[in-house]
Each structure stands twice: as structure tokens, then as C-alpha cells.
Length: 211
Length: 258
Image (cartoon, rainbow over all chains, first blue to last red):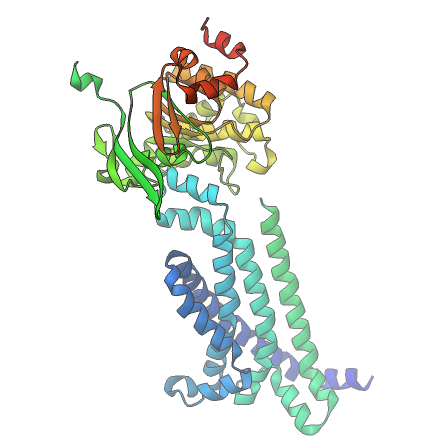
């Protein structure tokens, strides 16, 4: 009762923060996808790249998120705007599952199929775009789904550097020792994560069924 | 001998191939004449599949050379070379995300044939392997039986009308009844097409059925080249071991050999 009351009284603020949150997640995911897929492909083509690329993505993953935001703060161009910084940090986190699943997807293509593509006289890029990528799409999408759900959660910490989003409520609620304020951030964030999971999961299922 | 006319389509000239320290083919010399079906017969690990892959440059020899139409494979642009050589493998290797039609159309489309010509060829190739285009063109590989997949594999290899076909145990994964049916059909296709075929198998029956000549491979070395009739009469112990596995049966009658 109390909580509902609070929510409806602050619904505009909550909606605005949800919008900000979504924006942080979408932009950082687009960045991570744009970087992660080519990096993953590169590893499948040049195995020696596996250590440096997966290694650095792994390292980025192990840095606690709050610390990562802190580390990036003094970086010249990045630190100038809080949302810019938050987006880059979030994209770094999302990178690993996307790179991993790109690699797993391509390596999971039936060697017989790849060999016949080669034997038919497809060039390397034709093999990649006509055979390997379409066939690895469900696995790749699973990686994007995991990364998105993760990012929705981690993005709440972006409020610590002033990037906005639903984390604002959580931090404010913690400071005020007011559970209603915390929940005003936590519940929409949980809903966003669930929705992302469900929608991307549907896509994934559809792709798997297409074959 | 009239050299120009008698130039073989495929020549293995002292070809050796090894993987690491492990020799797969040792000093193989062999010719495949235009329009004939040369069967590479051998057990698993004899190097027969490797020999096949050297022809379309999926592999390159460590020493010696493989000539296709008089030119070493390493001098060919591999893409050009492969598009004029049809390739059929055991599990068919169909593209699971393509319909039957697109699978068969792969090489003509890579070659940028006009759409109506592609369609025409796809329909013709499907007819050739005994499948009705209107019924099969829109299906996906997972909706096909093993025998149908293998037929599509053959249709795909024939689609661009390549002068050379490489076949790697194309019917090996099928149940005996389906295999028998497809073999019979392929025999008719083979006689109608007059292509140069290099056919890999471990099955002497199949070798006798399709081979103009049979090259016997053992542990990476050529143990002999025989006509089907002489294969059965040879006293060579290795060849005789294959013959011993054979109940002298209907295969010979199918070929019209007494």
C-alpha cells in the first residue's frame, strides 16, 4: 500500500530513470556487439589472437564494476561525461560473453558443412557471411542475451559516477535508509532484465527452430 | 600415342603428403583419363580421401604435384578450380539453413548465373537425381531422409555442370537398401553424363559397379591399378583379400560381366 503510493507519486521520475537506464544499456550493448563480433571472428581466423583478446576481456570482467568506473574517471575524453564513461565501462563488461559466443558459434559449425562450402569454391568471406555467421546466430544471440541481462544489472552502479539510470534510486534509498526508494530503482531494473531475457530468448528460440 | 588428345584430366605426379611426421600418401603417381571413373579403393587410413582433397586443393602436396587439365593445382586459383569440380561427401554436407533449392543453386549463384538459368539448372539437377522439384525445392535438409540428402548432395555437385566430380564415399552412410537404390540410379546418371569422376570407397562392390579402373591404395601407397575384370582374377594377395570379402554376386551381372 505504502509502496504503491510512493510509486504512483514518483511515477514520472521512475519512468525517466527507466528511460535513462534503457538508453545506457542499449548504447553500451550496441557498442559491445559492434566490437565483440569482429573480435570473436578474428580469434577464429587467427588462433594466436585468442590469448590477447580473450585474456583482456577476461581481465576487464574481473575488475569490480565500481572500481572500473573509478579507474576510468581520470581518463581524459572518457571522464568528461558521466554517461560516456558509464557506457564504455558497461560495454567492456558485455564484451566477454559476446566474444566467447561468437567463437563458440563459429567453431560449432559442422566441419562437413564448412568443408563443402570450401569445396564449392566459396571465398573466405563468403564462407563467413553465408555459412558460418547464419549458422552461429543462435549461439551468438544467447551471448547477447546473457550480456544484456548482466548489463541491466551493472548499469545501476553507473549512478555512482552520476550517469543516472535506476541506480539513482538505489543509491539514494541506501543513503536515506528508505526501502521504498531502493525498490523504486530495483523493481524496474528487475523488470527490464526479465523483459530483455524473455524477448531475446524468443528471438533465439525462433532462430533455433528455423533449422 | 597422340599426346594432346590423350592428356589425362587429373594426374598425380610423385605426390607425397604428410601430416606432421606422419606420412599419409607416399609417392603416388596416377592418372585419371577424361570421361572415366577411377575408383580409389582402400581401407580407412589408406590416404584415399587425402588424395581426393589434393585434387580440388583443399590440401596441397608436400612434394610432387597434382595436375588438373594439365596445370598444377598450386598454379590454379583455388576458387576457380573448385567451382569446376563437383564434390560429394559422405554426410552430404548440405547447408542446414538453406532450402534444397538454394543448396543446389550454390555454385551457379556464386558464378552469378542469371536467376532464370539457375532455376532451370536446379530443376534439371533435381530431376537427374530423381527428385521432383515442386515437391522438394522448398524443403530444408532436416526434413529429408538420408537417401534424399545424399541425392541432393549429388544434385548440388552436378548443378554447375562441372567436367570433374570428386566423390568421397558418397553412399557410405546409407542403409544397404537405400544405398542399393541410389547406386543403381547413379550408375544411370554416370553413364549419361560422361564426366571425369574420382570416386573414393572402401567397398569393392561399389568399386566394381562404378569403376572404369580401380586404383588400390594401401597405407598411402598405390598397390596397383586394375580394370574391374582383372581385379577379380589377379593373384596379388592384397587385391585377392578384397575379392575374398565378396560373394561373387549380382554386382557382376549388373555390370554385364560374366
